[in-house]
Length: 320
Image (cartoon, rainbow, N blue to C red; front, side, top):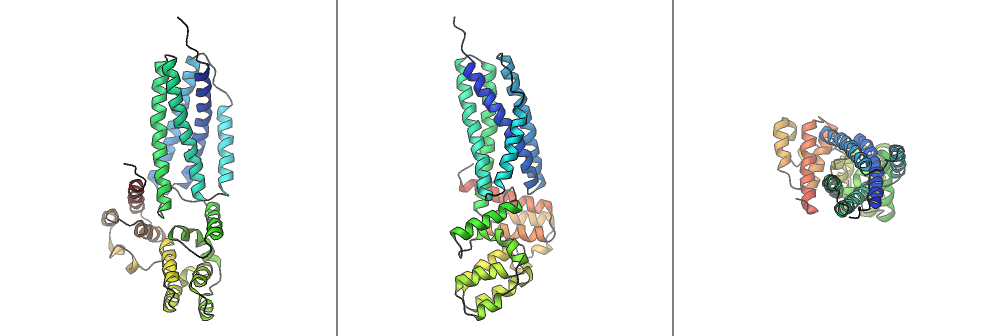
């Protein structure tokens, strides 16, 4: 009876081991971007689970008579460091798409390993491959949901880094220089904080609605946003005023009576969580989160809002 060739199986296991080391380091770098403690704990656990999978893969390689690559963890850290540095110049969604591409590759290679294990009559490796397929498929689902959360305006489970926020502004300015969408307004916040107020001057010059929107968003300070919105709306630039209102909502500077939950300031944590769970519009949830983070910053309320957006995002992308 011919002994099955396991050389290809060993090669794939080594490749997946290297990719797993990269995945571990990425999970650890993402911990700092977690919006809530629950997400932070989940990412930390993901990194630990990755280390357990790496140990299982190393064991499988040894059982097949091979030797794990001793520099794999070093290369994994280096690859993750390069990725982390590179993605700082990328918009947030591009960074997440890079993570998703890695997880998709791990799923595909795990499926290939399962087929190779069946052909080589290696039931232990087959079971390991099934474990890998389950784990990485779950991560693909999670990342797909986070991307959908970001597309819907958030709050996403992960925060942008400051440089990713700036990159997002640049992309939107290049593609839609005067059409400020709800999803892009949060990128403009740093510009709003530091620029000089010039809204009244813009309006007095009779600039058109698009110019008012762009210059108002770029020139207003936090405290002038409400007044700027009133001035612009009074001039008849409704679209521009709506965009500025969205900016105020995204940066947490709405007045309490403007919030989508009546009497929100008077609600205790339990009541606020229950009210958030009843919201169905992601922009309303975004307004509540921004306001909450800028004021009381109650972890349970923010976490409930993020969970609600995740549920809406999962429904949008067809994840049950």
